[in-house]
Picture (tube, protein in one colour):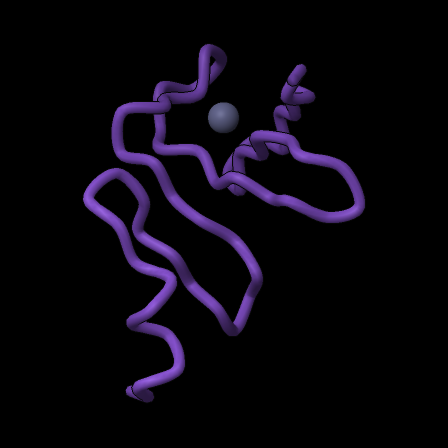
Length: 59
Ligand SMILES: [Zn+2]
């Protein structure tokens, strides 16, 4: 637990600053139905850690 991580938190995202990912509970994997993680680098994308499904975020 560190104070550094808390400033990244918001109502929508559950951010893990150590991994550099943010989990949005409403975003579920279309393949396995589990919660996906939002990776911002090198490009914004949703990634499923269970089945490796990836969806690029278009801005
Ligand atoms: Zn999946």
